[in-house]
Length: 86
Ligand SMILES: [Zn+2]
Image (cartoon, rainbow, N blue to C red; front, side, top):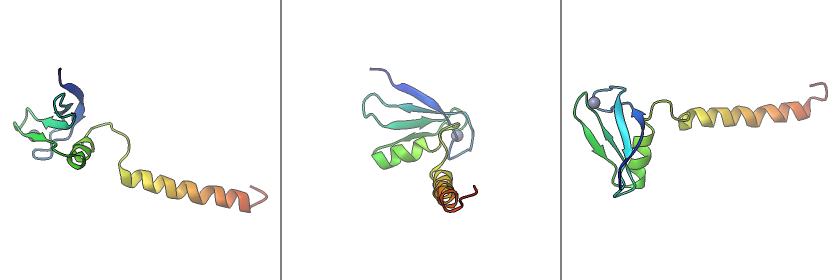
């Protein structure tokens, strides 16, 4: 049972972008290790696992951006259907 490398993440303590996020085979939760500052952060719950995954670089857009896009998408179709010349 090897731990699975998930991707590079931004270190929350030294802000290095080369911290490694991995999945613990034992707990099935993410943990972050940073060679720049030697920090090790282990998720111990789904909530902290989610928090660590948000530090991933190149990960899907953050929740805030997703929400903004959703709001825009909700407004646009309404205008199109309202305007017969669109
Ligand atoms: Zn660090």
